[in-house]
Image (cartoon, rainbow, N blue to C red; front, side, top):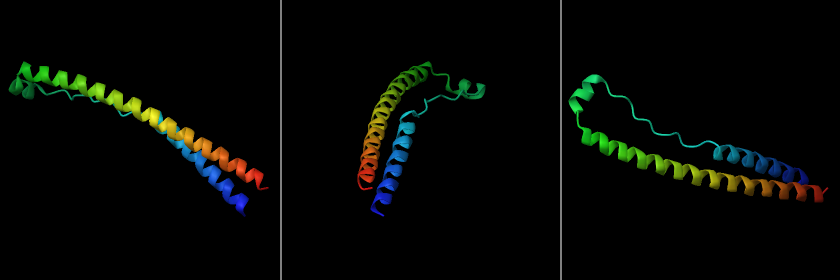
Length: 97
């Protein structure tokens, strides 16, 4: 009975390891500006706003890239931890047989 519960725990840990590895491979999508219609462009017409917008978008893309890199590292670290936990539970289950 105890061996079976350790085997179930090992399977759960391996499952979480796989899920977190997949999370690490899915970045936050990039930000895209929608195209304005001709009527909106005629009303806006400010090149200064476009300059600020392009500067903001450049900084925001850099921010998203840093978050993606950080999340990838964290999720892969968590996946490694779950993998080690699964191996430990599996070895304990085999030792109790």
